[in-house]
Length: 359
Image (cartoon, rainbow, N blue to C red; front, side):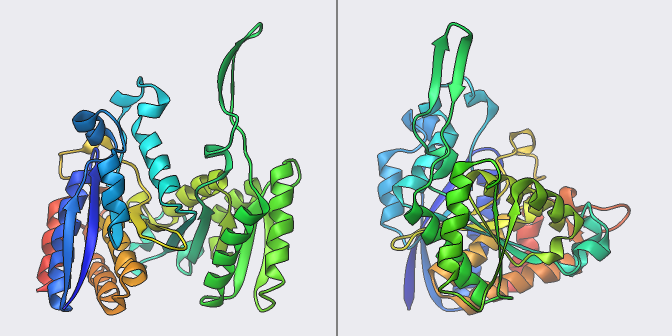
């Protein structure tokens, strides 16, 4: 029997709740498809600050490196906002990405037919949406140097540096073009080349890479226009290629096309080593412990893990279909409830409904 080692990072807020549901579902689906999953739960984010004094302990990093895949829920809580920057949960997340060289973040946005009424856009604008945001994840303004805060005669000054090298742009562009070959053969590269030098390099290097993918149609949009187009005509997009900051913003906009950010999974990948699979949403501490969380984004992230990291495609597709069947039957967490439609259920009951499908 095939066996895989999975590191679980439940994190903070609703993280432990959605992890519990996902863990249970994965154990059932592994039995159904005759492979073994060995789970190790490790501290990360705020929970690691409480237990270890730092958001990303060395032992957690080592466990991640030794695994076949990492399944992360969510991190963060306002109570940690007063800590020094290096001690905050979000710094632990950035360190995880840089330590594992997770340079490629893949965020699929596909509409479940039964959820078209849950979207904030009219049905005719979103019923054909099937796009992927490919976001560079280990460079750009979140990692650039210099950065910091200094005292000046005019008061305090804060600064961050957006920086990319040619090679960093080329490797993420290649991921986008290779993904487009498997889809509808369209890449839209998003930048701000009209005002930013770094975006001018981004555009030049993307065009250079496109010469090796003649069958792929490459277009360019400025980030402000791309944000507008996502809510004006989202079905025009196939693969959106963009930088760390712009991808962070655009993927959250794209998430709302599905009806809730609680529906958007992601995979963060490197050339070698384990990938990290996580929902796009945050830790939502205001609803933690109330059984209100939507676990579907994490469940869909688990399906991506099965297919991408473990090559268990049949199991991953089966899980996605089971989720679709539950939504087709009208079951909704509170974030998906539209006017007068659906049967509202909690986080735990979504897990129970899936368990019935998987037995």
